[in-house]
Length: 172
Image (cartoon, rainbow, N blue to C red; front, side, top):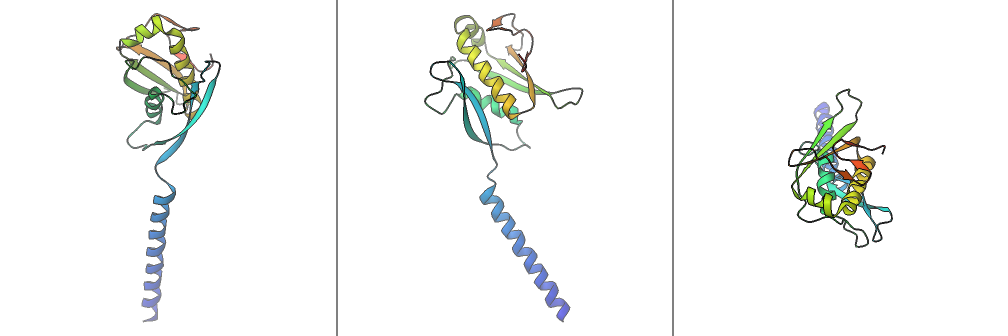
């Protein structure tokens, strides 16, 4: 009889600890990840960090894709800027792992035809966007290269100091 009481007490303690862990998990882990985004300041003189919490589920999303999508929405803080056309849309965003398994990744962004207009008429604004996006990906992920496409094709064009026909590395 005494053995049954001890066993019941152990079950009761395990149940209480399990319920407590579940409650703590809901209270302290909200499925959000703090990320640092970099946008140009009002004078376009420097990139300024902006911290955000992103809802992230690794079973449903690539963190890098979520970062790019959030970045393109623009800054939340009033003193930061993202001077690109609202018509510039990223059709697709892919993450490619390093085939040698070194943990380095490449992000490929496929923009719509507005990308060409931004290159021609807003090269400075687009350059600041890419600088900030590169810094954002570098600070938060293992991405080391960024590849820009327009409607699935490479562009032979200059963006600031970069030739965007080739992937942009995070060392330049």
